[in-house]
Image 1 (cartoon, rainbow, N blue to C red):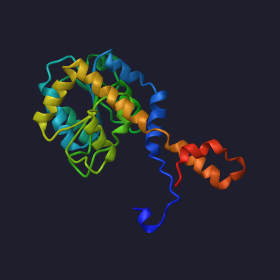
Image 2 (cartoon, rainbow, N blue to C red):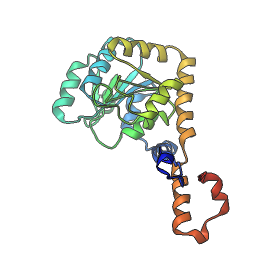
Image 3 (cartoon, rainbow, N blue to C red):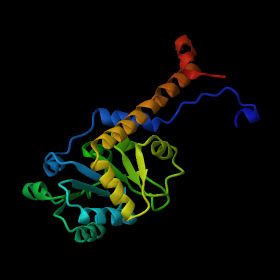
Image 4 (cartoon, rainbow, N blue to C red):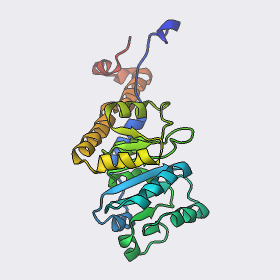
Length: 240
């Protein structure tokens, strides 16, 4: 489209979000309370979930007969909503702000009612459900994918290029209702080879898309510090 209006000096940098999430995955924070809860279990995680997402996940939790544990990080963390969510869950459930070591170790479900932890928490999961897909659109799938896990989300994802691409590559799985979430859950966590394959796809997708930050820095350096600009950088920029 730019060529059509005679703009030809163009650099395609990519998306710096890939660089940011990759850096988080290289050195994620540790969460001692969360690790007390996990105790080596396989984790299914819901990240930045809304009520419509929580409805599906709670149904899955209540029907589940495996030893898998669940971490929920709702988008809304006010006390009334968290308390209502806990009342709907039929398995032993704790919330992050009410830490008790034995209760955390015995629980099957952990609800994180504190902000700022989500991107680091994905390191503990094997599968992540990304919220927002039953509303205006899904939240950040890359924060989970960079840790190498398949992502699941509701049907409203088509405006998000990375979600569309992950679905096409086999690293993401959209669901429309409770039955489809249950089927996807069984399919992924009941088949190690499929889980490994889709996890590898997610991780490799983020790796493949990295590099935008460096491209932008080189380009800006070429403009504002032309004396220090190295000729080798031209290979990166692919100017026309």
